[in-house]
Length: 262
Length: 248
Image (tube, rainbow over all chains, first blue to last red; front, side):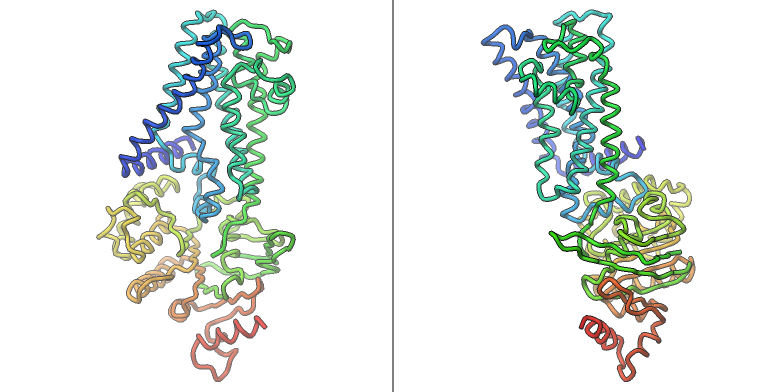
């Protein structure tokens, strides 16, 4: 499965190499867009020393860890949200006649190697913030755990987004709120948002576990919303539940596929 | 090899329910070469998509090679070959040869078997001249032969063809027909063929099934089909009569 995935990724990379100019432009553009996010944070901190109680390096840490998980998913599974396009073009059928899971094929479909630049950018920001903050060595183990948790959460969201397109074929952009919207939300400390929204992204859509809850542990901070200490460690379990839900939704989506004429 | 028992598939279109296929029952045994005819919108493609597991039937049951296609889709994929005449399953920007290599991996075909089969297919389908050409640069006839080869590299027991000769010139058609006849005769591959080209049917199919409004309207040999309209001399006239007769 993993081998098949990377074989497909390699195939698409070679196919993309057939259009070198497009490849180069997309790479530059990807870097530029990712840099804007960091730029915004730096601009905010040019005018203030804390944001909702967090310092510049702490915000960059929260941003970097979420952006790392997100950009890895954006690179490796984001093409799942093209289900609608494939349905309309009638090309989904060709995925379904192969002896490999449609999820793996769609995730690898039209893989763009140029997005790897964003992963690097997020990794650099996270590395810088963690170094500048002088994070407690006894709490640093949580950093890889939270990145993996974030990857599972975002990958699940993309799976759900793709599956929803089996129903919302005519409005594929709606599902972007789930994926890109979630990414936007996790770029800042959740303490900038209203309490009800934070409750929602903790107990309903578990975005708080991408970087907020485990991040508070790494930073050695108490939750401004007063959630108990054990919530810092619930992330992996929450991610697993979401992943199982995503798998179910995906299966239902495929079974309800209607195909096109001819 | 293929068994349908009162299989049906309906779609909800706005508030109406459209029955693309209803109560369809037939059996195709191993080694048969069956033509599947019907006017546009009769339910041919829906049937084929149920056979490969792309569509889940809404009623009845479908079994192909002993498997329920919609539940065992990826397992069945190794035993069935599918060709859509209207769209390619090859990778657009890759040379044909690379698409084949990728298929070898996806289907986990043994390297030696693959080499032998590709050699044979390259000869019989005359692919030699364009194995290194990107698929997007192939002519329709070349691409179709490439698609056929791609569907057969894993030596499937069943080959399902959805309008494989659509848009092809007479020479390309003839070479594809010859190839299919040999495949069926020499390998014993079961073939189910949908087409609007009655020449395909006359040349290839011992048995013909005709579907109309989602129901089986005829199932028998080509001679039986001709006998349904005594006095008519060409297959085209017979089929026209059946299509218009059952439609009214």
